Length: 228
Image 1: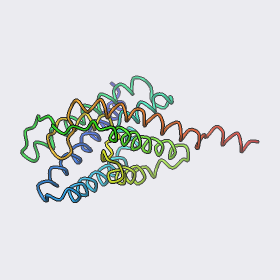
Image 2: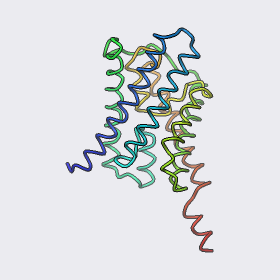
Image 3: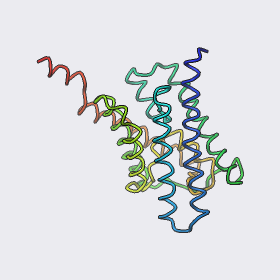
Image 4: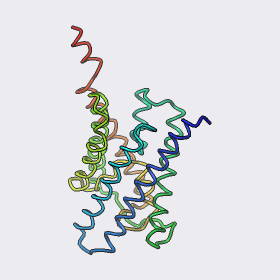
């Protein structure tokens, strides 16, 4: 395999691994530090926002900093990522996420392999994940169309951070992260049988966000207007 391709897949693996490690690890640390659920969520959100922003910035030039199957699948559907890269990205993201959860568990002396008992199947969570993922994909597509992809580390991290607090599900918005979080029975966990429920909502949200962005930021229409 060419080194450039291996670098892309490795970047997606490492990026997703570190993102999940930060989400799960900060959740465990938060519950170790305080019993105040609001403060626990704040600690978790701050760590996630900072880590996500840094990872997007560092890996953007290597893999595009997807770290998210919803982003990769939409990019593939748009012809921005070929099917081979899409498949390897999905494997790298899901594998990296699971390793990240195991790593975080181990860092805090929890059982490395543990399954969450946190059931999340309420209908409001389904709507919440649609909104969170739609907003994420809307921003990804908007930044690309406007030629402002360099702002992604701030914009995307800010969206996820704010969605932690205005969505009832705390904004997973990522199928790989959702799957990985089923491997930790901690503050950030989700029961395995709730994963498919969340992932379906995330895919629906990704399509909605992309369609809205396409209507508002269509570069072909904009170019046509200029030429006219």
